[in-house]
Length: 227
Length: 218
Image 1 (cartoon, each protein chain N blue to C red):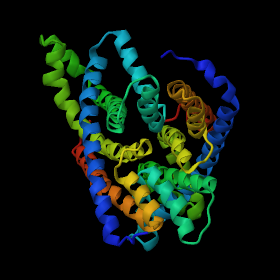
Image 2 (image 1 turned 180 degrees about the vertical axis):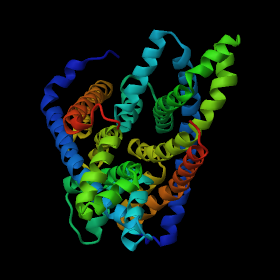
Image 3 (image 1 turned 135 degrees about the vertical axis):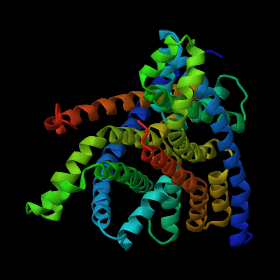
């Protein structure tokens, strides 16, 4: 059979709709996920000074569970499991929650690696200079750690964007859902999936460029420095 | 409707879990083989070959695994190829794994100091001999921890084969849930299954990494 990409043209609206969903899910997840990761890193960092506390054990457990189970299972657990416990949850909320929890765990681990590589003495010096624990965490620990692990962070956000294709399985109308929808109408599976796959590729490239642009602004003061 | 005991659920998940393990092994073994060939070609090959392999790696790393599975399954069917879910999942996961391993291993080969290359070439070893006797043994030590770490991604990746109807752990979970409707228990058990498979590998990868860098390599 011959390829015919013009069969996709009547479905431009669906593809655009799916694209917008994928984009805003990714945008919200990136912000909320990184915020969550910072909180987790802060709480774990505080605890790592002494013996492991209950909080740090629980957070460590959260990170390990997320990192060692597939995203699709986390999604199904939330979407099907929570209503069974009497907590109603829409597909979109479940998708968003699963994505944020997922990115949060991976990013917390990435941040921890960055924090661990900051010399302890710097932290102690900041405290000795009279900064509060929060101030010293923010200025001395977090920002340098953030700039150091920023490349890994970009990759992780892109992985989550690509992984979000799975939310189509709980009928969130994202880019992949649009592809399945069109495929079920025009039976042009190869053309549809090829085009949508390429859209994802462009998204991944675009996201990387955008992140690198923001990174150059954000960490401009460090450029030319030792780190 | 028949009642499902907890044991019924666990038993069925365990039976399906076998296929998660088998698919993971196929993907990892196949991916390692293809990945090794790609790495060798990329390190020595001509410019256009290197460029093509880079494109291959970027394509698989820059697109969703789910889409790769759809293309291998529905896409191939639409082109007139009759592929089973087994074939589609094996092929897609093998190619996916090979792209990531090729990228990891290239980094490891490049991490071997270039003086080692020059020295072995000066000593009269040809490309393959230098690779085989000088570079690869050193690169291998660096490659083991991230490779073990990536195997976790392969196992988790097999969960997506459920979407094209391959009955492994996740698909068994959704099927059981349709019959027994105990989503909380069932998906917690499914997650536990993956955790039991993945966590030891994660720990082992971290242990290997610590050992390698603790030993003062580099």
